[in-house]
Length: 172
Ligand SMILES: [Fe+2]
Ligand SMILES: [Fe+2]
Picture 1 (cartoon, protein in one colour):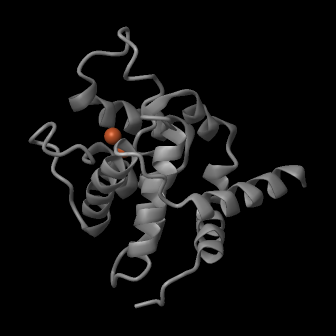
Picture 2 (tube, protein in one colour):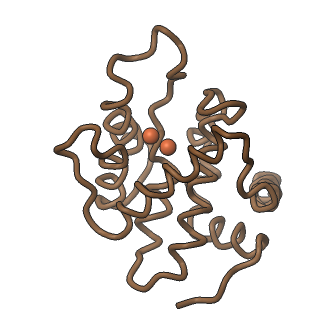
């Protein structure tokens, strides 16, 4: 088990592990869509990812190379689900749309794609999370959505640190 990381180290670890996703222009598309309250989908996936990293890095046998890309891209469905013209069956199908979009634009492990696909279990019932990483994503997605809906802004400091790292890397 690793020791608890401070906000700077959490941001740096995420950047070191997933810089290629975070710096990819396609990843920024999620900034255009509202998720919960004043949270964009981009804000939401980063909050979920920080939860997963914070708890996952301290748990034995959790593969961060699977967990972190899955968390970053789990809601990569690319539309505003509050818009009345969004694709049908959002609740049961957006995990599928996200997995297809993620596969199309990013090079991520098969188990990460599978974790994305099952993150809305039991919607639908037959897509059951498999493995620690998929269950962690499933769990922290709910924790984060609950916190965001009721006005919390989880990982504000970590977000600030991460944004600085992204900006610095883009200026190079
Ligand atoms: Fe989702
Ligand atoms: Fe989510």
